[in-house]
Each structure stands twice: as C-alpha cells, then as structure tokens.
Length: 440
Ligand SMILES: Nc1nc2c(c(=O)[nH]1)N(C=O)[C@@H](CNc1ccc(C(=O)N[C@@H](CCC(=O)O)C(=O)O)cc1)CN2
Ligand SMILES: Nc1nc2c(ncn2[C@@H]2O[C@H](COP(=O)(O)OP(=O)(O)OP(=O)(O)O)[C@@H](O)[C@H]2O)c(=O)[nH]1
Ligand SMILES: [Mg+2]
Image (tube, rainbow, N blue to C red; front, top):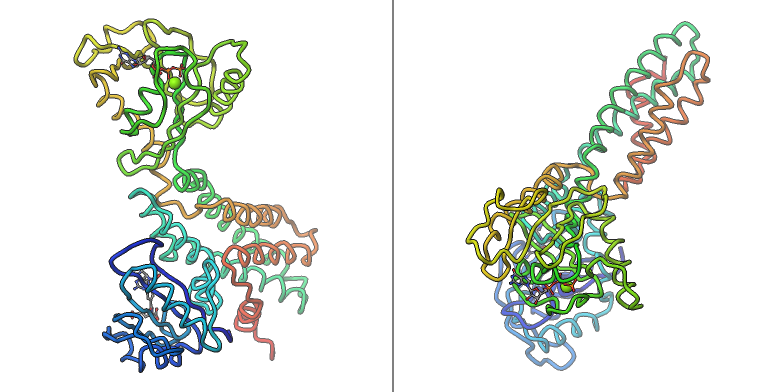
C-alpha cells in the first residue's frame, strides 16, 4: 500500500487527550519530520510536535511507534497522543497530510488494512466494529468473542474440512478409479453430514446472535390514556414523551434505548389503539400496530378508566394494570383476571416487579446471543449457502457424477471464502497435493 493514512482515532469533541493514528510506509518519515525523530519501538516518548511548514510548535505529545509487520495494521504504525483541543488535532493532522505520501484515512481503513495484510479476517474485523458499537455488557462480551476470532477460527476449520472432501473428489476426477467410488462416496457423504450438523447448529444461534447486536424490542401498547407514555418516561428516567390527561396525546412511535441487566432493549411508546377520525392520530395508530409486529414483548397497559382487550399477537404479552396508586405493591391476586402486574407510575409501586419481568424477558430473548458465532445477516447468508450445498452433497449417490459433487463442495468453500474474506485457492491445492501423491 503506497499511501500513509492519518486519522483521529479517538472521539470528536473536546477531550483531555486525543489519539492521532498513522499507518503506512512513510510513518518513519512522518515522525522524523513532525516529532524530530522516531522513538524506540513500542515505548512512549514525550516529544514536541512541530509544523514543518513554519517550525511552529503545535503541541507537546506522547509519541508511539509500532514497526510493521507486528502492528495492528501490519504496516508501520504510529500514534500521537496529543492534548484533545480542536485546534491541536486540526493542526497536527493538517501538518501530516501536507507531507508527501500522506492522506486522510477513510472510514475503517486501519482495520481494512489489517484484513488486507492478513492480521485478521473479515469476521474479526466486524467484531471490532461491534466492539465500538457495543452499548451493554452482553453486547461487549459478544463483540469481544467475535473480534478475538471465534467465528474466524470456526470458519477456517470448516473450510479445511470442506477442502479435504473436495480433495477426495478432485483426486477421483484426475485419477479415476471405479473400484474406489463406493468408499469415496461413503466418506464424502459422511463428512458432509458431520459438517452440515455443525454449521446448522451454529445457524440455530444466529437469530439470538443478530438480536443481541440490535437489542430486544419491547412495545408499550394499549388503549389511550392508559399511562403508556408515563411508563416510557419512568423507564427511560427522562421526559421523552408528552404526557397529558387527554386521550390521544401520543400520535407517533417513540423509541428509547435501555440497558436492562446488561441486555440492550429498544422500548417503543405507541399511540393508544382506538378507532379515530383524526387523520394524524389514525396514522399513529397504524404505526403502533406495525411496531407490534416486530416486538419481542408487548407490554399491554390498561387503567381503570382505560380498558381494552389486547389483540391476538405473535409476541408474548405482559398485561399490566396501571394507576394502582393506592397500594404500595399491588399484589397480583387483587388484580382483575388476566393481569399479571399492577403498577403506579405516580407512586412507583409495582415498578421493581415490572423491571424484573422486563429484564427476564430481555435475558430470555438475548442470552444465547452472547456465545453465538453468527452475529450478522451476512454471516447467516453465507453459511446458509454452505449448508445448501452440503445438503446436496449428502444426497449424492454413486449415480451422481463426481464432478457435480466436487462443484457443490467448491461453491461451499467459496461461500466460506466470502464469509472470512480470505479466498485462497492455493490452500485448496495445498490440501490436494499434500494428501495425494501426485508423483505416483
Ligand atoms: N493506543 C491504542 N489503544 C488501543 C488500540 C490501538 O491501536 N492503540 N487498539 C486498536 O484497535 C486496541 C488494541 N488492539 C491492538 C491489537 C494489536 C496491536 C499490535 O500492535 N499487535 C502486534 C503486537 C502484539 C504484541 O505486542 O503482543 C501484533 O499483533 O503483532 C495493537 C493494538 C485497543 N486499544
Ligand atoms: N393517578 C395516576 N395517573 C397516572 C398514572 N400514570 C399515568 N397517569 C396519568 O394518566 C394520564 C395519561 O397518561 P399518559 O402517559 O399520557 O397515557 P398514554 O397511555 O400515553 O395516553 P395516549 O398517549 O393518549 O395513548 C396523564 O394525566 C397521567 O398523568 C398513574 O400511575 N397514576
Ligand atoms: Mg402517550
């Protein structure tokens, strides 16, 4: 890679310290020019940074140098840990990008180079992106596993086995031996069967794996004036939604993100469900119904002055009676039939029990996502391609042309190549030439 890239690696905005990262062949030159010299590898050095254009001191900074290939990107890397002021960051970046061979990095380009230089595969790089996105501890655990190469290692092992099966088929194509065919089909079929079972197992966790990245969706629904927006505000601990005694106050859906016991939850407040001639409210009611379709849990609220039977829904439903201001913790047996919880947003009664139930529901929906290998739709699609081809291989019999079986295996290998971003045809040849004595 000819160009050396520069970017602010820390967040934008005023901060105590900001980290400016450099990667590429001109890093040493850049350090000599702006910091006077290249520090000892991997040792922090305090240096005055100067603008080479006019010699002006830009900042006093900690400078780190990581020589390639044992660096994050595999190239020479440097970090300038500067004071976090806007003018310092702008000045240092401008001084660097004015140097020959330097330019600003594009989004994700450091990690992209790490992938291109074989430091990690695509799934681990995605794990790094998820780490940066992680908002709750369970998301963090999932992302750490992924960034640490959990799916990468599984995918490499699967590909190795697929390549082994393919090698058997290729050998039969290159050196046909009629007598071997039944035994050959037996071992390829059973190999495919075992792989299929393993990958299908990984795919079974895919839904919760993807879900954990996005968060569980909980929808507060019910008739107008039941106290839905009041509950949203109480759970969000801020005044997100307008609350009023007028039925039909909320007209749009409103979302807040919650961390319930380490699990990410998107909580949605909706317009009260009712027939209405008000055009705007009717649109809100339509949106409310639509959000019910993507709920993992519906929190159905009713109050003494606002009752309505919940509709039939695919999602589990928690039926709650609100405005129970008189009792400290409304015991369930005092509630009308069908209600699981009583609540007073005004006194706070019933809130701990409700939170407990919501946390339980979030845990149930997302817990297995922490250890899932498949965390993105992209992974799922590629692995589904693999299992489809493996299913075809498993169904093969002696009448199936060997070339057909080989082709399915080849397409399966290719799908894993797309998953990991490592499409390395040499590796398949290695397996072939290692396991079969071509010189015989
Ligand atoms: N200041 C700083 N903090 C950071 C990063 C960084 O780049 N800079 N990271 C970046 O996102 C993460 C840490 N990840 C890193 C991963 C590998 C290497 C690295 O230099 N690896 C070499 C040497 C390993 C070693 O000394 O044991 C290698 O793998 O060969 C550096 C950071 C989080 N914290
Ligand atoms: N006494 C009492 N009043 C409540 C409680 N919760 C909400 N209210 C009141 O009930 C009225 C309606 O509350 P909202 O939260 O706006 O109800 P909503 O279900 O969002 O209503 P719409 O948006 O119109 O569907 C407001 O005057 C609230 O102050 C409660 O626990 N006790
Ligand atoms: Mg409301």
